Image (cartoon, rainbow, N blue to C red; front, side):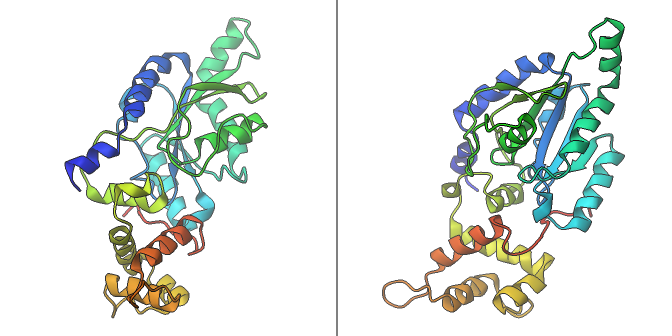
Length: 285
């Protein structure tokens, strides 16, 4: 990945957002980072723990309905072992969000006791909702607030300004725009984010991205390639797999060549929409 591509990952409004989060951290009692359960490593912001400091910190593994259940359980255990309150959730359906409310009360028990001691019973807890673009922050807030107040759109970078929302359950949420970190030391992280649509599709070449995705599927979920596309992953190179996809879907360019660009776009779209089944691309071990 070139330096020019690195720069495209971190547009100017994200720099502004990070500075705003640094200023707003003192306004909240806890921070909830939403990550993609399919890529729990790549979708976490490594700069966030330092920004949060000693505030209670929850990690919500969103889109758990699209991830491998066994892998999600392993990630919950691994995150809990290092001190995080980790929960599997699906913000779209609301699955697991009742546990989120209970967990916020648990990690903020000292603050609630302080409020009671000062005669401030009923004062709401304030939680900053953070995460990378397109990971589900606005969907979470809309679910908890009960109204479609936060802008939701299936593309990165929609939420631009910090906004407060009341849930009516002694809990207020501070929405923040999605933030990526300035550079990725590991190219794989950038690819995994691109697989899930966390970054704009124009940043990386779709054919190259699809080939890398097929290579990963061959390693992690070869049965999916066999069942879905009739491909023997052990005997087929990743680019050949892409050609097979184009051939079986009748995707050809003018002149008769396989339209691997269209096949690549279709493959990535199917993955992002959950049509390839429940898969986790990053494992604890």
